[in-house]
Image (cartoon, rainbow, N blue to C red; front, side):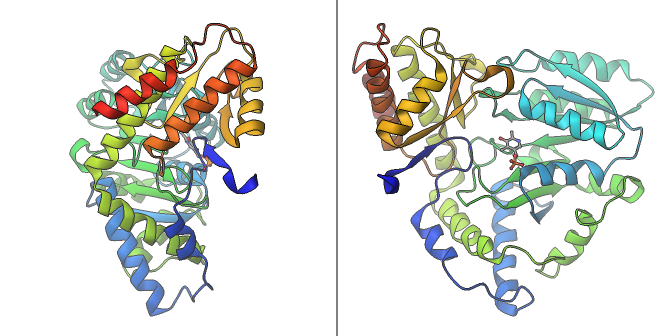
Length: 384
Ligand SMILES: *Cc1c(COP(=O)(O)O)cnc(C)c1O
């Protein structure tokens, strides 16, 4: 049954009916007063979501477009940057930085492990000449379900005093606390199809006053993604180029829903969904790919040892219309990933775990005792 399709992937994430309905309209002129009112409201609410007074700029781009804008506006060819790599998206930061001629030094961890903040500390402390221009990391590494310790790494960046901190918060924003101003994050990039509960198509970049200072002297070429243009136009509640107007209708509705729920409730819900999912997976004797101490609030990666992960995904889709994500690159076939980001409720987790149990049964996975996963998840959901 097509209409029953349930997306449990880390983007695109499910979209609430209110948001779908808000988008189901004729577009309006993007230079109209009506559209400016929407822009004004969404900018204000985006600042609320990011806990910031900094500029929040809206791009017609996917998350990677926001990442690219976060590099080319603040750096110059040959600049030395430290990039944290422990998964597909950390690697993307490194590739992107190399593509623009930056001098990239990576700090790596195995896929499934968190980046070690102490390695950042020692490299930053050794840089007495202050040649490191930026530290670039992925907060929630979607490819592995690992949450990196942004708060601690950022503290070491602040102690360095010169480098900017540039962060991909694509699957942490709207799932876990990312207090942009309190932590002093300089450049924060995200995308609409993740925690925002709207379809793909918008990228967001938050820029600190320190980053704007760097912008003034940054020499990488930029045009469509020149954030100075977006800043100037945001001040007039407009955008430099034609934006996907209907996505703005959806964004307006989604942000209103998020405000009504409240940040603390949103974070608590994601924590609860994460804990319940992980408890269920453990109760089913399936190995979790990331440790509890580094669990992403958006995605749980599972590394089944006796069943092919792709087979599990195929049965989940065919029999239950539930879409799980697979592994990327060398993890293909080795892990599957359950997304619990955005418009996801307790009920969705129970449904997914129940379907997973039935799938494992169908595939003859012997160490599953039917009901154990549901019981473990239900217990967490009842007590938190
Ligand atoms: C989804 C995602 C992105 C952006 O990918 P796009 O396909 O360009 O939207 C970037 N970083 C992380 C961690 C992601 O999960």
